[in-house]
Length: 201
Image (cartoon, rainbow, N blue to C red):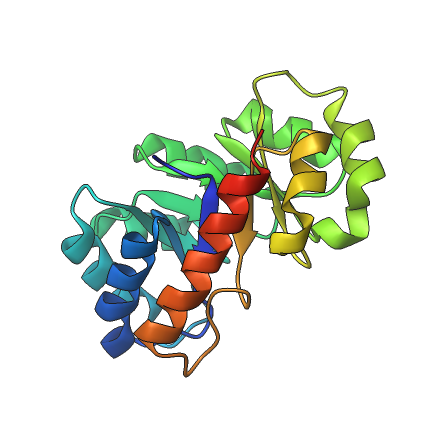
């Protein structure tokens, strides 16, 4: 079962990458993002890509420029997540065969991202947009648009967001903070997965 949960590992170091990857996959989370403002992020991503094989989709977050996209393509990353909706980044991501999840907050940004080829939309910060804001915005989007709530959303909110029509979630500090052991991540991820499975319609 492939759950629509993206684990955001902000601050992870390369020597933690493989054990934490294994912990996440073991718990049932197979979409994994290393933000580029982490220490040596490309090293961590490359280690995870090699370790994961076809068991997970590994990529980067906080991707702001085409040069970073090119570098990610070179190490085998499969996913590019951004806080903004830069058409050049989206187009470069798709040109390299990677999945594109840009950050949006308004209808203008959402449609611009979709026109540029985005695979899904990261609604960020989701807690500021709120359920009402998301429902109003998603009502005008194509019905097959994949949408992810990121920022201030946790397991207790899953059911409400699913009821509002969200596809999935990006979770950071709920799953990982710098210094967490693989065992801690496994425990947190297991709880997240259980909550997700219970809430999903």
